[in-house]
Length: 209
Image (cartoon, rainbow, N blue to C red; front, side, top):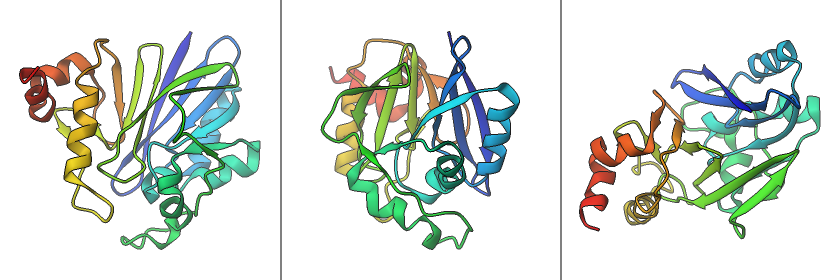
């Protein structure tokens, strides 16, 4: 059985998620934000065994805490090659926030799914907020990063943002017929069918079908 721990950190703040199997104790860390030590503390307290870091995109507030996790546990970092340079220069962010650069080791660009440490993830490319935006799916769980928020979507006015790509990504999400629990990069959790009804960006696509 999978469980999800949300850890919110930083000035923005960003939601980091630790997805873990309560039986095997294996876990993956999704979007490790600024406080890598806070994340590793939870991992140690629960006796978990990290097998990977997953990035929904390369912004500093979603990868800047990966380095302590990678160094401590020797795990791979999954993400899009299109955001490789963005993650690799996280410490040079426009906000002047201290964080670590992040090296993506395993690209998800050419695949629709992958398995690591007993976890099997679906992958949907969702550019718009950044060129390499990705959503991950497992069981009834969706990690949407900064593509989809509760009744809103991610910004497209930052460098690399693209309105047309965001609309294309949302049109793909609108085709999903399963009510995933949505764990977003910021603010509250939601579920996909709620967004189909109350998110004006998604509901517009649903009405057009």
